[in-house]
Length: 126
Image 1: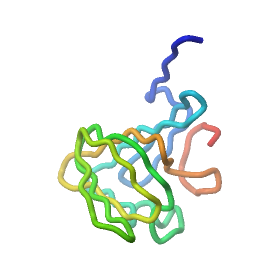
Image 2: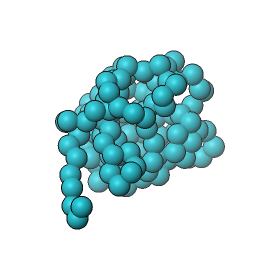
Image 3: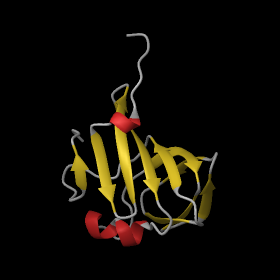
Image 4: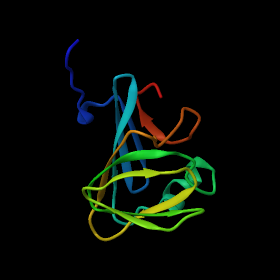
């Protein structure tokens, strides 16, 4: 197959969490997530209770489509990721939406859940 496409709005793997959601498609055998974080979303408030760790344990590599994501690593300086930024975020961080605009990201390096995480999902095999 020389070319193919997947649509996030037809994803069979959708995760919903407080103040946001993530749709995941598989491209070339790897998951790609389209996540929407609403104003007021904060990892430590909205996902920590569901994930059960003190900080986000995932490695992320992605791109900010809209909004601003403020990231505070456990062992490094804070950074504001803005629309148009490609990013890498190492495990061990908190993050939140800065401002009144939703933050929408494409993420190749992380995912909002593992099969053993108690988040609401529809379909999917991850």
